[in-house]
Amino acid sequence: MALPRYEAVAWAMRVVTVYPQTSVADVRTLQAVEAWLREPSDALRRTAAEVGAEITTITPARLCAEATFMSGGSVYPIGERPVPTPRHTTGRLAAGAVLTAVYATSDPAAHLDTALNWGAAIAAQPTDRSS
Image (cartoon, rainbow, N blue to C red; front, side, top):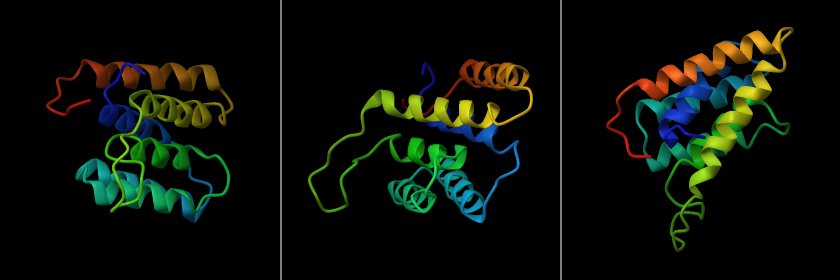
């Protein structure tokens, strides 16, 4: 929750991609999120959300896509009046992706500790991105 929005998505991706993905849709979704992380544009933000919406259950990949969508810009479709994303939503979705991923392991406590350390390392890095 304390990370800027871009960094929150990057942290969630760092954690989620360590674990095997359970479906082709999960893999495609994470590829879309990764594309947005390389080039954070509105078009790629929306693409990640569209691809993630193909996943019908709550998975870490889907939560990463939702965090990406909520990271900035408008939640309304293109061409309609812009409605900004709520600031707190990205962090909550990123945290949900991390928790969902680590609690699917055989040793959630150890995995959570590692994930939190990665988040702390990201938080310690200087950034030029706006939150």
